Length: 164
Image 1: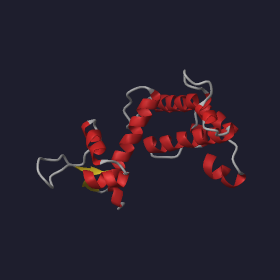
Image 2 (image 1 turned 90 degrees about the horizontal axis):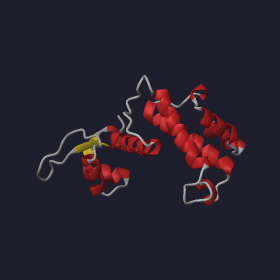
Image 3 (image 1 turned 180 degrees about the vertical axis):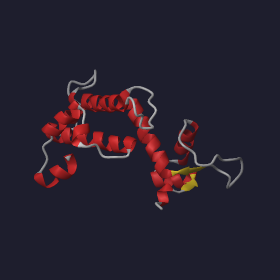
Image 4 (image 1 turned 120 degrees about the vertical axis):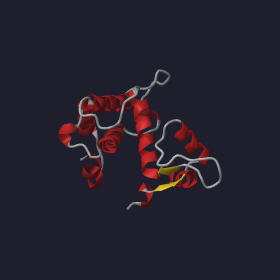
């Protein structure tokens, strides 16, 4: 079994995640999954599973991106709507500047539009994989990601691997 899927102390999990232990303790207070509750005293701390903590952080980031509280248990109804909200949030980040910026973020960072489209598409696919446990098929892509796929320009050596 994957070592990161085993229960470990908060200190070890923090090292694996390259976090300060206080950050991980705060996340637990904020609702991060705990495999076993801790107790007072040395050696009696909570146990967590690193992969579950990492998935929880992705879910929290996705919740912030779509601007709503969403239960991430792959809901049979509403999954398509959630996918669309995620795609729309990524699309806005790609194509619009914030209210205090005149250009989209990728332009401010000096990243070309075609590469930014590829990054947007790959980000969507990674989020989809994390939330639903599978890479989206081309017919599962929302319209925004279809457009990103069509506009993504990468060297042929990596295009298929990155955008397919």
